[in-house]
Amino acid sequence: MAISSTIPISPEEARAAMDKALEKVAKQLRELNNYIWSNPELAYEEHKAHDAICDFLESQGFTVTRHAYGVDTSFECISGSEGRLINFNAEYDALPDIGHACGHNLIATSSIAAFLALSHLQKEFGMKGRIQLLGTPAEENGGGKAKLIDAGAYKGVDISLMAHGGPTNLVGRPSDGVAGVLMNARKELHVEYFGKNAHAGGNPWDGVNALDALVQAYNGISTLRQHILPDERIHGAFLDVPKVANVIPAYTKSYWQIRSPTLQGLNKLIAKVRQCIEGAAITTGCTVKIVEEGLYTDIVLNETLCERYTSHLAGYGKEVIQKHEQVLTGSSDVGNVSYVAPTLHSMFAIPTPAGSFPHHPTFTACAGTDEAHEEAIITGKGLALTGWDMMTDDALFESAKAQWEGQLPAPAK
Image 1 (tube, rainbow, N blue to C red):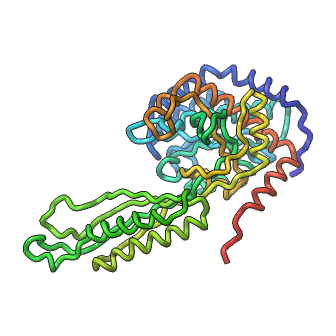
Image 2 (tube, rainbow, N blue to C red; image 1 turned 120 degrees about the vertical axis):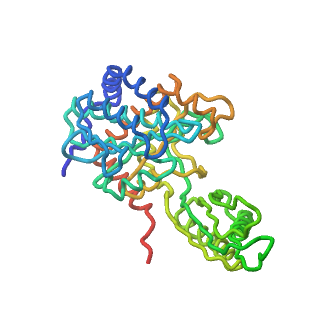
């Protein structure tokens, strides 16, 4: 479909129009943000956040599909009927015990603001394009975006945009944010050992010790950690272990996460971890069951999207680093999206005390402040203007698309 490459307004005019549109709903946006922050919900249990966001969007005249794509706490809202499809991702799940210590209330706020702002620009200036706000639950634990991809939620998406809050020194020096960040690919291993019960005092020679297998696997993986790359990570938890000492245990269960900067590196590291796990089964005489799931890919960075986002935030007086070369060793299911469409996963700074970082209890309070909310709104405007570029400028869109296609790994032979 041909779309005019002429942007009919200047960035200054676009900012003024968005500022005016979002000012009309400023109170409601702050209340919505605070409601999500005050009612933290875990993966796939974000019913209050889902309902509150959907209610708000409907109050603004949008049609919302609740419980979208077979995921109970997902939703979809689309503005426009033809042209390129610009996606904004809204996360809103929290962490156990420490609430919104990753600031997903701010992610939701920035994406909602971006959706409203870009929808307003489209209607006011009569440009073709479609704008999707997608509710993406369970980023922290559950791979919500991966499930949505499998269900077809991102089918036809041309550009995907979102932003994540963090401290001002996220990359080791103060800034207002980072447009492009590299994150690790990650996969989960669920491991069960099966042995044979016996009396630990009476006839231990008749037993096959599943706890020995788990301990040997742990020790082997701990030894492996000395020989992995600096940005790679292996961490695990014992989920089911013996509760008594006088029985040779016949069963144990553990859970592991393996991270590496690339999918190729992840697959190599998983193979080494499996050797530790399977070797422990052999030496103890146990059998082992390994289930691999929960793949979060690395993020495919897009220089065009990073440059446009950085430029637009500069228009709001924000100094955003265009790209950080060092891998942030966390992981996100937005990486999976970046293998489906050109994607921006930026980071924006909020006021935090020294030493505060996402997933730390001190970050929870920071994510609920008025100051953090204002940063999320400005970020949403930057995302909206980046979406406007991609929706209306053929050359910029083709540049972003060509870069993305050139960075995707070659299909396995």
